[in-house]
Length: 203
Image (cartoon, rainbow, N blue to C red; front, side, top):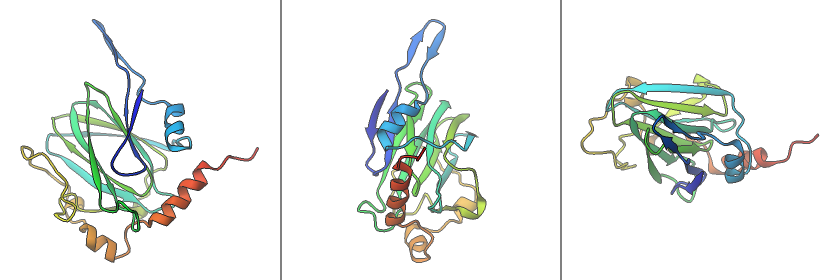
């Protein structure tokens, strides 16, 4: 499995080796040891989600309060989509930076998104199916969003796809409004939380 750091610190792309023959294909979708070697701690798996989206569906930019936040390991098991990671951590040297990864059923890449980072996904095909491994369960009172079409962020969405957002995501604030309201996680809090995750467990 190949690992590539994204332009947003604490986010990584994982490309598995796909073994194909006339019967189909086999791959290791997730390796706990590889992820732990990459991020410095094992993923505490609390919940697994699956979303199925029609072409043009745009989900995000979603994030959760830190602590505990919600780290995600995301892959596309059918169809294709553009996965986007955004640095929403106030005080981060790369605050507002974003990066993209094509997730599809051919290369079978995955993306790791650390706590405090924003995550969005644009379906490029009908039936684009994502599987999320999550470090924490869904807690609606701690979940937030930043508008994925905010011109300040300037995310390079494909010009040939008309994005369709949920009413909640469409009404989400832009980056500056979210920052001024105190909605966004703080970089120092995230770094402290990451350090705690990397501490050896006694006993």
